[in-house]
Length: 98
Image (tube, rainbow, N blue to C red; front, side, top):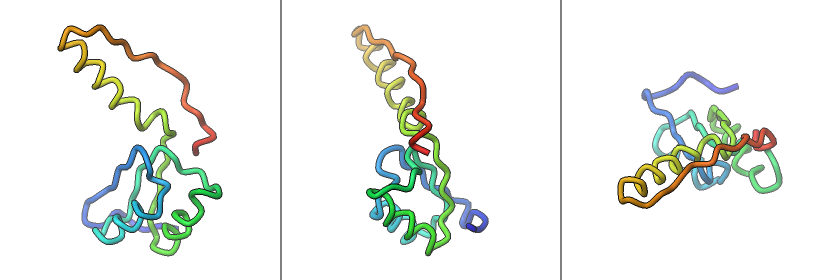
């Protein structure tokens, strides 16, 4: 089980949050809470999950789509301001990411 948020800091990583390098960076910076799009424990992410467990990092998963869609929405706003028509197409989050 994790522990309370330390230093009033939370790490957010929309892409790559299931990577050991990201987790190591959190540890080096005294952050013990990670919000990431991908929290599923699989062959790729097992080392990151083990590192989180050893260092009592609290992991909060939000699905890949849900954590990255806001950047896409912002890009549509940016393009529209430039006079380039763009629309964000809503989709359904993939719950298998969790």
